[in-house]
Image 1: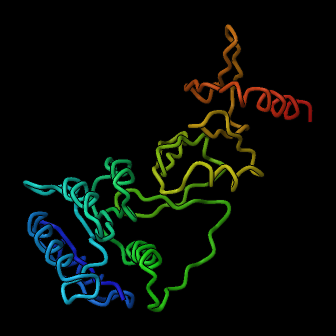
Image 2: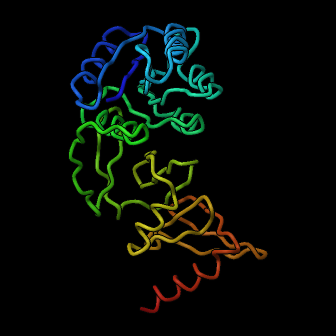
Image 3: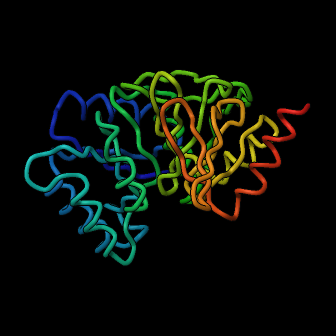
Length: 252
């Protein structure tokens, strides 16, 4: 069973998060802290008591925007600890996801927090801590759609609508004609998953859908593709494979 600490300077948000944590069977205990400084004191006491002590903390559910010491500051401090608790960021802002990954966060949950989304973050934390608490069933993913979060609401983006994917650390940004979405899936995973759907790697940072390539451009030995109004560089390593794929596509 996981021992959790929730940190948020807004009391209603903190109470709601604690309510959801207590409702999950994998959470053995959950306490709240109103700011990062208070949380740091509790974490220090927990570490002093040892991993099996009465104040031990397995995972911290951490807001980012807080006065004084903010959530990112606290997470940076924890990276210097010998036995830090796991960190799950819970925030209303998508913009800090890449920084969260750099700080080895377990997950990044957007507010308003939904029970199902929080359950996924708890599952990841439980797996890392080797918890034997009862698991919550996970449904098989829909191969034609991928879930993304926008303003705390999960939407399902059709894979066929994705024009290209950009790597951002252990995250990937999906681009469509209507906008972009950041998901916690490495580009290499999407490359393997969507190869049969016409996606091809053109660069260490980019995966593109062949059907959305408008032009292949050659200029002074460099190769690029045009997707909508965006021009993407093709690395030398991938240029020949891409040309061959496009040729077979136009002749088939």
